[in-house]
Amino acid sequence: MTSDAFAYPRPQLVRENWLSLNGKWKFAFDDNNQFQNLSDDIPWDKEILVPYPPESEASGVGDRGYHYACWYKREFEISTKGQRVLLHFGAVDYRAKVWVNGHLVVEHIGGHTPFSADITFALGDSEKHVVTVYAEDDPHDLAKPRGKQDWQLQPHSIWYPRTTGIWQTVWLEPVANTYINKIRWTPNFDGFEIGCETNIAGDLNADFTVEVTISHNGKLLADDHYKIIGHEAARKISLSDPGIDDSRNELLWSPERPTLLDAEIILLRDGEVIDKVSSYTALRSAHINRDRFMLNGRPYFLRLVLDQGYWPDTLLTAPSDDALRRDVELTKAMGFNGVRKHQKIEDPRYLYWADKLGLLVWEEMPSAYRFTSTAIKRLVREWEEVIDRDYSHPCIIVWVPFNESWGVPNLTSTQAHRNAVEALYHLTRTFDSTRPVIGNDGWEASATDLIGIHDYDANPQSIAARYGSSVQQELFDRRRPGGRILTLDGYPHRGQPIVLTEFGGIAYAKQRHSEEGQEMWGYSQASSDGDFFNRYRQLLEVVNETAMFSGFCYTQFADTFQEANGLLFADRTPKLPLEKIAAATGNIK
Image (tube, rainbow, N blue to C red; front, side, top):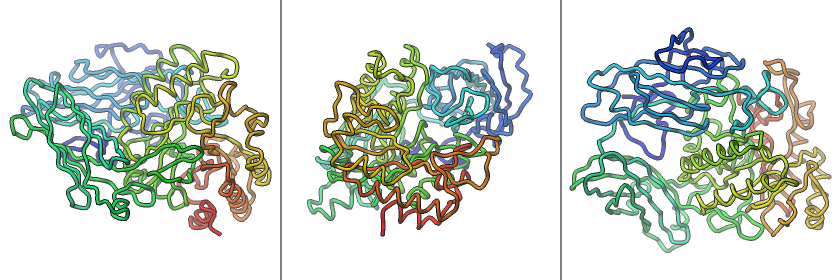
């Protein structure tokens, strides 16, 4: 069994033996949702290249019309040889049903999170099998988390082409009858220890022991053994504390020194090894101290860039694992220490490269655009799965459940909308007490650990005047960047850090229209290379030197369809030399 261009899909729980099912599948649209069972006469009239969505050119389908549902089918070969076989999906948008050899093996709702099924019972004695997938994704449904996927036929304003069906890796994994199902890492910076939660699945009718080793550069830092009670166990594993700051700091993770700790987890039954996985973790802390964001116990100025996570030919799906790594490298090369993944739950491989190369990530839930009880239930369910999937990545330092009041448009007047934001804030802090949470980024803040402000004023002098330290109280009492109040009544600024989380948006394009025929635009316009650089440099100089801010997030990383306000063109070609961008980003004179 081998990997493919997308590499191992689950980087924090790795086994050597796996089989990618990416590649050519049979495919059919089901616009009227008329095929409800495998016995129906589904017209397999197309072929698609998974995991690219059918709206993308790379998929071989390239159809961006309205499609309510679609079907996938392919054959595969695998032998169980006394083992279980798990079938994994990275993400299917929006509601999925999966059959193997005609047996329904799993159903899942939510377009951005993974799901799996133990398909052993459906395989029988044969080595040749068929997997069939039904994906329902109503393009007009505004009450589901959809992020930047447009509900109009053609992309408009700040919304982009839709993504239907499979858009992340599909893969098979043979495991033992009892196997390690989940690993969860929690760093304890102050205690110089790592929390490790191990969850096992399968046949639990025996006594099981887990061995966890943690090392760095071949040096063993911890070797722990403990029993599994029921199906899980949690331990705090103390690391060998060198006691000297220099040596201690070498083990800390940061963008400047992204130290990862290698881990191996072995599951034993009566002393016999029955499963073994490799993983990694890191020692770092992210919290708030008065008006500053703190990384590893020290004030840390955030220099972020907003990243939509789209590619021209593959849409939400990355072209390859190399493309994901390159995006992280380009972000760092432009002088940023972090990224705000905007309205997208990114592929875990991106988070792996951010962990490995050193890039902070703000993770933001894709929004619904209509407030209903169904919308909130969907959001809560999927957001819980998001946090569960990505909790152990050291690169993630902030959770953002809402952006710009999307899905909760009447925060100033409707109590239920305010309740939703406050509930998601507290629920997120319950799921993860180790990271700050922004309840609603941009404006109309209530329950939140940071105040995020969106302000696209193109005049650097206006930005300097608006956010000077002498006007801080006036800013919250009367001024309204973007035409919205910054905090809701009853939630005055309590000294939380203030971050300019969207600004800039300077457009500079080679052509007037996108390939889709939409007029290219931005929040302001540059006329030449020199004009573009001067506008960027002057804005960044002001924002870097504004004492009120604990950081910023510039809009944006790359041009995205009709939006020409990237520092890079859509194909990731820099609009200016990277070293010039980096110098301006970091305010290097």
